[in-house]
Image (cartoon, rainbow, N blue to C red; front, side, top):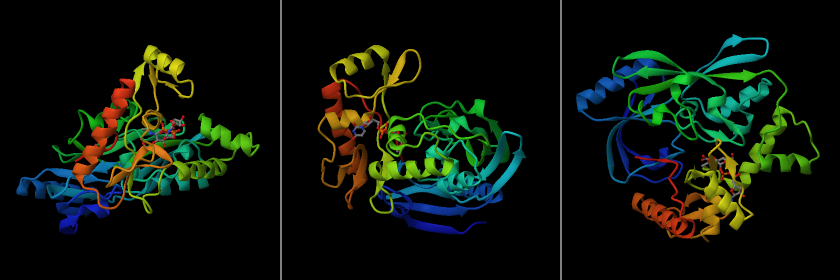
Length: 340
Ligand code: EPU
């Protein structure tokens, strides 16, 4: 059985650094240990919570009566090496950016635009992580899970995961049913294409590079992110705090008419995505100091902890932002991180 810790300070496990204590915490490095931790949780009659990098979660204060699994399953295995692609199976506990760096070094493309995202590999299917035109769903072949009820390993194909913008079955009907143990990605051996994203294109235009290499794309993304997203090592945050709201085409077009500066992104024939960061900035809340928390000076979508924030502060700031944006635009923002 893996080592157990009790009354663990949550702030060390959350990039936002908000929260009380976990009642129990186990570092899990293999699937056998998973079964053991679930037996323990049944014995104690406590729910299990699986934690990856803690970069997209807001925890309550006080003692959280959970058995927390700190996912640390490692592994990097090439399972298919074909003419144009390679399939790699990666352990859920591997740091996402370590994996991205490895694939870029191997001259494999597909996830380079998702460079420098904090968190673990196992979290990428849950919210279908995405950045700069790439989404996890575009390269995931399958997700290996531990089926809690049946104490067995199961493979879910991409199509079974119901991936959508920042969404999957792991956030919905399969929540609490499985623990993700590894993810298999299909990466391409073909020459990379320029990320289809305005900020990235502008970056390479300025450098007069028409066909960037994989490493150049990775470097560009790291540079661009540095300016917009605080490094959790220096400034506590949970990345984007709200999802970009999806509205009808007519609502988006009306907004664009009234505010030509807004960038709108098509989702499908009927729906468009509006940048939440733009809405918050236009509502006058970019870089606003709410006391314990602020919106980030360089990116209104990111909430940063000024050092002493507790859960109630996060809720209060969330509500103030949602109300202010709604009053100005009639659009309701939804939070992006999970509240536990
Ligand atoms: N914008 C503003 N003001 C701001 C912030 C943004 O006007 O304070 C505008 C930008 O000028 C741009 C638009 O909003 O026109 C979009 O901004 P950006 O390109 O920075 O991306 P985003 O939509 O704010 C999303 C993801 C990020 C991801 C970036 C890059 C969500 C919720 N967020 O942000 O993901 O890195 O695109 O692809 O979809 C995360 O999920 O934690 C995250 C950081």
